[in-house]
Image (cartoon, rainbow, N blue to C red; front, side, top):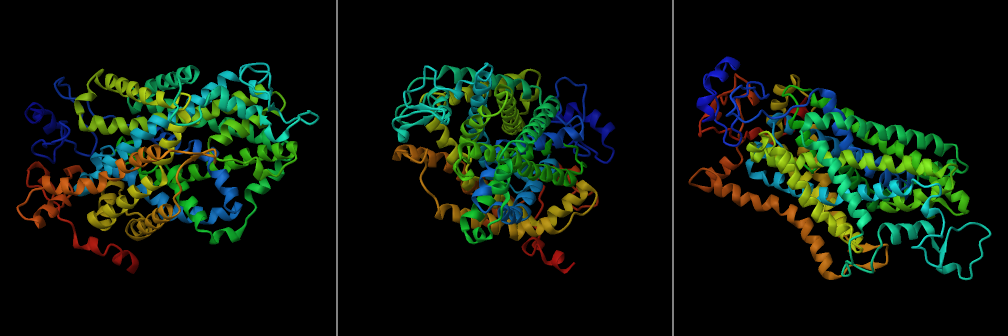
Length: 623
């Protein structure tokens, strides 16, 4: 029906195409240059969204990539793994793995104009990669928002003349509570518990003794979770044109707050001790394999790759957008933010260590402990603590918020591309509302008294280093070898208007698979079962559920291979493999001089894998 009803419009808009194209997945008018054509026919589905301008895309990518990991994970890993020496493996992994995969995902989305699942029509036998990233995105969106809810709870609790975690006169405090102030008299120092820790565990979490004792829902956290989901809903419900405006505030305002905290931090007594501890190089650490594992996993975490989000963001670009330059900008912003945040955090930790008379390494922690225990403790020792607490948790809220709603956009994009009817007015809004309600219900399991244990299961397994490395490995193999690095470079030249540096092709074919596979094996060799607070050991059934959350995404890739072969055309296995490794492209993705131009209009459209793909580096190395 789309073919007949839009024939007249398409003839006007695309002079080089004699008849409109048949698209099996998206019944839109023919695309001449990769951008949807508008139609006045109300029976035609609305066109696919595009960014209102280029800056919207760049800021959205920065907003998603720059998140809580830059604040709480990178500084901790830097001091733990040799200070300034850690930057050596960090930048090696960045150049050989992080940036090449980041550019691959963004450019694939822009070239194919599809979300994380549809882009792999370029190599159908590996379309399971799209399934894996969609599963990871769904699981990550379900638990990542819990951190934001905790930050909101802290922020609301900060609106008092005296911060509630700065003293022991609260209903949740126990007799062994202490603020560790000099001159205090306690009979048993070994049993003293910091008031900040008690606020976190007994007030915010109201934590139970284990995952098998979930207890009731902590209603304050449930309300905060609902509030954050509502905010996220209104950030994405109208599509990327609306999201692109919201992200200007959520992505850029945290830099202002971070700068204010840095200025205040470096003026505190003892700040230089923390900064020195943060950057002092220890080159002996480079011989430790764990340092390289931490560097690799940090790159893939902080660059938000293997989640389908960067692919979704790139898919809303115009076909000839220079995403090559955009990728460099996003990479510089991400890594620079990590380094910048380290100065802000460790200047305060140095002050805190001097106040307590202990080494910096005894106050430095990773993960939620840094955000919800160490930094709130430091705030209590500053002048006007209420102001600094509010500023800090507003920053955490905004850093998490743009990462959250862009992650939601990546999942929504896949579903809307699979079911284009959702583009109709109010259809998408209704679908997003249903998705938010479902995710909120899942999140309720993480705001119970035993919710912290559930949260850690999600965090440790569902979007862990092993799942991200697994996906990145197959992304590089699919493009570098099966589809062909040379052929994809030809596609990029058509899209960008120039041929990019051969380094990315070398990485996709050799460097990235080697780096990701080596780190993946190392992660498995050094794998340790999950514990909470270094003391509580999860029961076997909980560990099994966590492993299943990890494997449910990883298994999508090998599982899809026989499905693709079964659905492929051909009588022999060789013919089916040939069809399953054949890209399904449209005319705007091909040069008009190509022998394949126009073939996508028939069911016989085939793009045979080039034999040059088997030697993808030969010409580049010679040149």
